Amino acid sequence: MAPKSDIVFARTGRRKTAVARVRVIPGKGDMSVNGRDYKEYFGRTVDQKIVEKPFDVIDSSGYAVSAIVRGGGPTGQAGAIRHGISRALVNANEDFKPALKKAGLLTRDAREKERKKYGLRGARRAFQFSKR
Image (cartoon, rainbow, N blue to C red; front, side, top):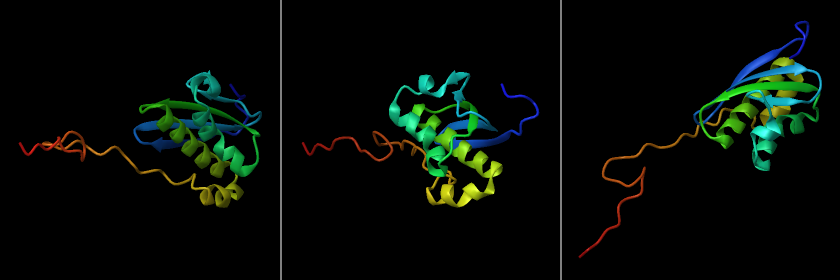
């Protein structure tokens, strides 16, 4: 936990049904998700890279990150954390905004799962048709 004198930048990130409350604190580059190290929490390297992306874009890792994430699956949670980190970094330093915006990290990904419709197998997939 960071000392109280440090400035804390907190933002919310969302992706699919996952919601992440992210705190970014100037300091070392350690990241924790739900009280665990992010590499331990996200077993897949792809999800770890998603979380690291904002720091790759700004070429800096001088911030410690603490995130609490609920809902969704691992990839949706990683995307929510990435969104929250990006928004908090803009709060920390307005100079990061053009690079993060160009990389598309400040835009909330609005894609959601389409609902299943009656008379169909899924959202759009129909049952197999048999002429006879």
